[in-house]
Image (cartoon, rainbow, N blue to C red):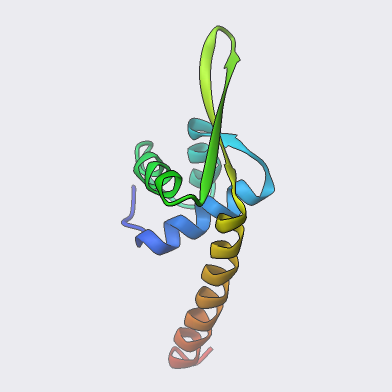
Length: 101
């Protein structure tokens, strides 16, 4: 089963994953799928948009006679990740307070 993950949350998940290491699209998707039930095609539009916004940069490399496009965080992406993590912690704390946790 897949779920609809809000864009800002998905961006945070993608950026946090790329903050650990550069990844190509399929590997990134599989890494996220270990935690969130997203479809295989979910991350690609997010990656394209974040590349256009300068949050991620790419380079291509040949692997087993195929070209893989690797994504890595830019300095702008790292700053945005810090902002999104802060906002998430605030939001989660507020919701947990409302739920009585």
